[in-house]
Length: 213
Image (cartoon, rainbow, N blue to C red; front, side, top):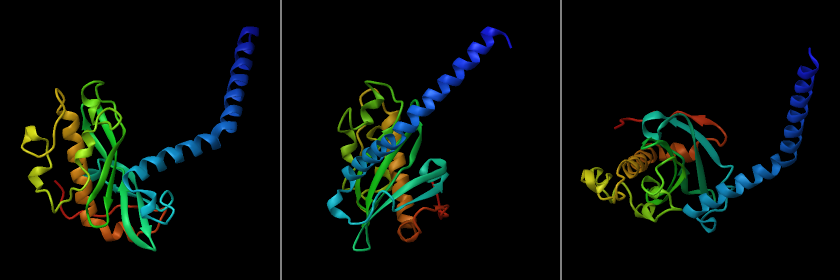
């Protein structure tokens, strides 16, 4: 190995060592910050005063490609009080956003009422489709209080398609994708509610759905 090659090798080794060292120092803090951010997001949908279990660890992964938008497991966080189901938050994906996948949190109370919706990640167009994000507009506030019993199947569309949900000016694709994903998550909850609460925490499940849109 030439002298310059040896110098490059040593520089790379030192660089990797420094990165590894600082990652080890900050890994616990990063994990703590991620947990706190997720807990804040979860508690925006189902308030901490409503449950008494460890919401963050009482979780399962479920797989349903058509209703939950992913062939990988998506997390379900379960809230209970005195051992009884209060509600859950499921994290489906909308694969048909304008610029790709939109990741959601959908909170549903045990009686089937929507607690709320949050957008976790997206790449929608700034100033147009990103209005689905609660940090950009109050568009997602159309969902709380709705249920499959209170809205007909045809209502779960944006107004441009004949439904009840507002679209965003100049951007229909993004809200259409979110409305469809929320409706499918509600259908999934409706079919599997008992198994979602009864399943042992920490495992992954593929519950069969009777019919899918």
